[in-house]
Length: 360
Image (cartoon, rainbow, N blue to C red; front, side, top):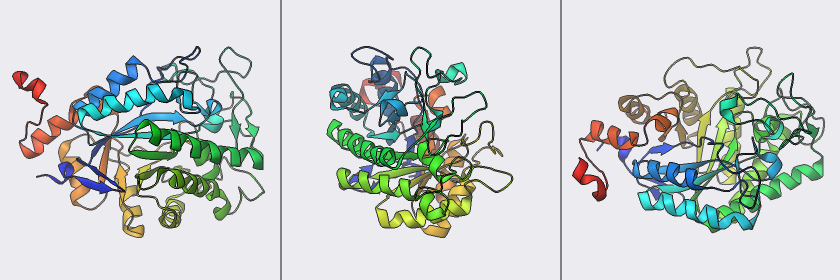
C-alpha cells in the first residue's frame, strides 16, 4: 500500500488515509434571515461528495468564531448554539461518505467585510449594505482602498480567545472530530504574528513572544474544550516579504516549538496572504520545502498543500519525510473523486462505494 493511503493516528482519531480536503470557502451561506451564516444544501452536497470521493479528512471551510470575523456576509459562522442543527447535518453528510469531519475556525480581522471571492474580494464599506467595520491588531488597512480597521483593545482580544473557545466547544457538540485553528492567509491570528500588520506596543505586539501570544492563548482555550480530539493549526510559514521585516520561516519554526507544549497535534503549512499580491509560487509543491524545514527542525507532524498536482508528487512528499499528510485544494474543486483516482493509480485499488460498483 502507498504511504498516502495508509491510516494515520491523530489524537483520539484514526484517519483512514493521508490525503485530506483542505478548507476552501464557498461563499454560499445566506447573508440574512433566520439561517444566515449556516450550512445549507450547497454545503451538504459539496462536502458529502468529497467524503464519498475518498479523502481521509474533510475540513469544512473557514468558519468564523464571531459574525464580524467572517470574510464575507456569505461565509459560515459558528457564533451561537442556534446554528448547531445545520452543522450537525453537515457532519452527518461527511460521516456518511467515510471521512473524518473537521472544521477550520477563523477570524479574518482586517480582511473581513468583503464581497464573495469570485468578485475579487473588494471591500464592503462599513456603511454599505451587509458591510461592517473590521477589527485588527493595529489600525492598518489590508489594501489602500480598504477601511481602516478598529484596533482591538486588551478586553477585545480576550473576547476573541473566548469566541474561539466557545466555537470549538460547539464544533465538538455538532460532531466534528477534529478542529483546525487558522493562523494563515492574512487572517487575524496571522495579523498578530506578522510585524507587517502588528504595530502594537503592548503585551500583544513588538517582541516575538508577544506576537505569538494570541495564537498560544487560542490554542490553550481550544484544547481545553475539545479534550483528546485532534487539534491542528493552519499556519503561514512565511510572509514572503523581500525586505525580511515580516513573519519568517525561522519564526514559524519557533512557534511550532512553542506549540509542542500547548498540545498541537499537527501543523498545516501554508504561506503568504498578509500583503495583497505578495506570494512566492515557485511551482508545484512550493510549500513542501517549508514543511520539510519545520518538520526537520522541530520533529512536529505536518500536513502540506500548494499545487501538489499528482499522486506521485504527493506520495514522494510523504516517503521523503517532508510531511505526514497532503492537503488537496484546487484539485479537489475540479475533481471530487481525486482521492479515489489517486488510490487506483498508486495501489491499483478501486475502492468505490458499493452503490457505485455498477458503474466501475
